[in-house]
Length: 347
Image (cartoon, rainbow, N blue to C red; front, side, top):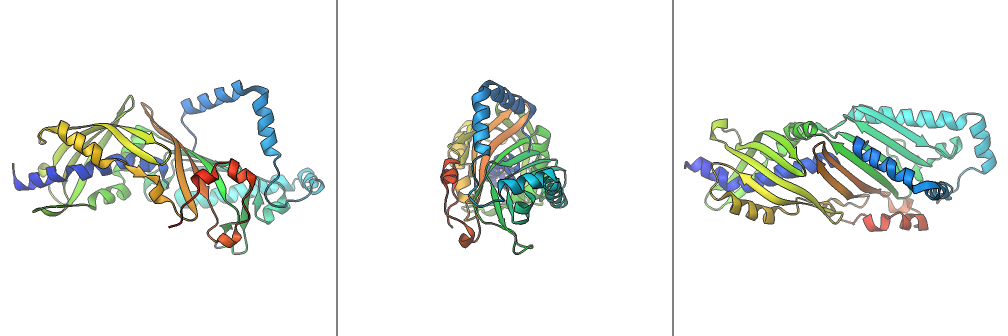
């Protein structure tokens, strides 16, 4: 075997890590809005079976007083009757929609739920629901994503160019990518740059820069199968090593994504079974969400599923004030919503 191909085979381990991490990364972007039809139907079935007790529970949550002062009941009623609340909700939703569409494109829908129009002017809203479809973040298609807040939002509007949160907010996020969208994400310039920039220092061989070319994704039951060509950056495709990588993505806890039952097939790799076992132990965890925690945000996954339709996931995003002086005292609703479990770590 030629020396150039030997270097590529020695570096295949690191490229395998990047190829697999790209799939769940695109679905989360994000750093991530309707779920798939099957998920929606299942959720609807659960809602129907909950009965009147669930309805009462939801009503109780809706009536829970916010952690800040809002307009009185009479004032809110008058603003509703005169149409101010409806006007404010529509204007706020359309403004947010235009801003998001300008930045990431795609089909964007935003609904802003108000206490009252005057509260909106003070930066206080009851909740926000957002859905994205076909949007792109840095050249990566994020598929279908939905995000909604389950608690009031309080914004500091003193500086219109740098609007900040005054209280922490928990956002429920759902995302779904089809097989075609996953393949497209792997071929995007953003992901391909990260693959081309892959460096591996090998004793006697120096630093190797690799490139994964023409990745094709297929999903068989709960297995992700990727056919790709691994080659040195700038080298001719004829010098590359064809690889077929198969494995199962698994969620461990709510902060780690791991790969299990890894299999590597290649005519140029001797004893691929031993190579796969070594790779699986070295690569896990593929994604550690704790390393992405910051003072003002943190993300945790609750589900991660692979099926014939593609990849679906659900998670919780906690957003906190960048300026601690803006944050109020923690409330009981904050603790019960699970924020304490997902709270961002100071770095």
